[in-house]
Image (cartoon, rainbow, N blue to C red):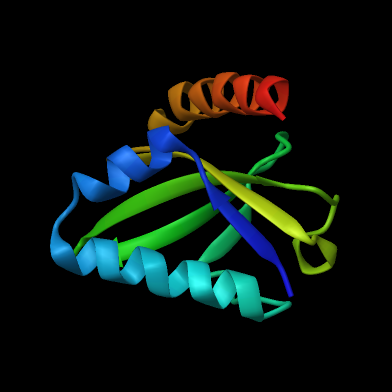
Length: 112
């Protein structure tokens, strides 16, 4: 139903995590590819940006994957690109991560 791509930067982040986080990430990618509407515990639109976040909870910590889609609404998109991942420690982490995701998306689109 939906094509999911993972950039090298995002994959490097995921591979640096423990086994449980890696497994959850790939399970969530499978869900993203198959299911039209996903619960907001796992997926959320980032306000004032073009990006969405995929939330991976491991214990008391969150790993956030920022991704872009080819439609204004996730439920209608046919393709998603996972751009950048980080461990959420506070809300200030988002500004830097969004800038990184913008740069990665720009380079990704140049290559396509």
